[in-house]
Length: 504
Image 1 (cartoon, rainbow, N blue to C red):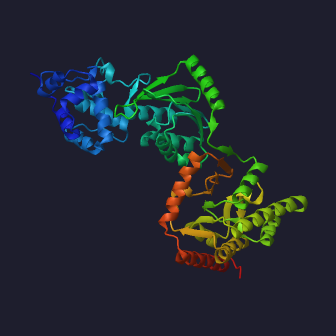
Image 2: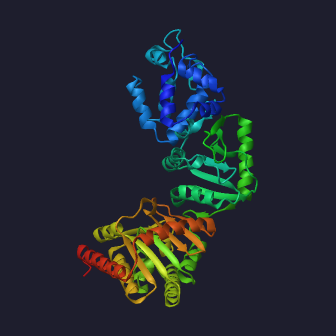
Image 3: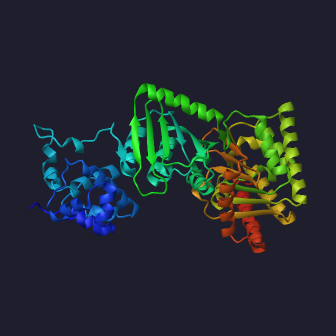
């Protein structure tokens, strides 16, 4: 009789998995599991069932957050690897699980130096099917890191219920790649009216939306899927297809396809779907258009409640006289100056008119940013507030005029409300949200010299951002006392600004 599979017993006990459940998961007879455990049969690295066995159990380890336990067990048994990546951990796990794994571990340093070669099953093959989140994430991470800057990624989900993109490791890989390599992703989703699933997906990728890295479009599709499929078209290199069973703990299966004709036709098919899909939002780049000004006008000067969160200050709070001074400091003159001044006056008049009626404006500001403004005497913001493309810098007198405008509105406009957060969440840094309640969403980001404006009237998107905004606002327990505290804080900031920059 061979040695029992003691490590298999350890992990089954840890995960509370019975012999029957394991046999069904890897499609073997329950008696074979018993023979492994009592030593009548061995689990070898060369056996075909080890792939299924290790894949199923390793995914369970991840789902139950037992990776630290597994690393500790492996190291206690003398298996030391660089476990910095999930791929490396799973390779070590295969050795630990197999009866002959320790022998292979002892001889792996001389593998391929002579006639000794590891079993074919153990050698990584980039073209084979990838099973489970660990294998798939390791494959995609390596492939995406090798992409040239500016590449494109197109993704189609057969249903908003597809869970693959919600996995933390997968979403991090794609977001980091988009951020580091200036890669833009187009996502087309076939909707099945599962609003909960769509909400989860949107909330998971809000950061990518705010950064202007992700375009989302939808098509309507009422079929009940047997499997959910995610198709990734990565540059001109690869189609990667992931299949999942809905509402199941079974691991996803990923298939890399490099065949050129398949890749070519998949790209054509995606473009057709994308052209007929309905975008969740419009994305305006630095090309300045009249349309963006009209969007801003509708938000500030048309009836309806407006919620704003800014990592800067709002020039609409300054006086027309001070605004004109800023325009002249930018070099505006004659007709250029006149039309910009007239536009601001139209915005300002409209905002004050809605404040006189029933519409309310709520605004969230960052204390950290206000303190920086007081110290540095300038504020970075989208140039569209001054009818310019790109980024604009408001000088110290202009910043002071805005602070004084906020204070004046808070004292005299009962439905103008401001909260100042001590700690602005990362999601809101270097950007501004305008939420016209139940109507539209506008995002402006200024992490680079190019301003990006995102606009949407889709309720599924505005609803998601509105919930985030309301959560921030409600946490502060806004009251008359909070209002007075806000006025005092703004007066303190204005005083610091005057003192630091000789504005007395």
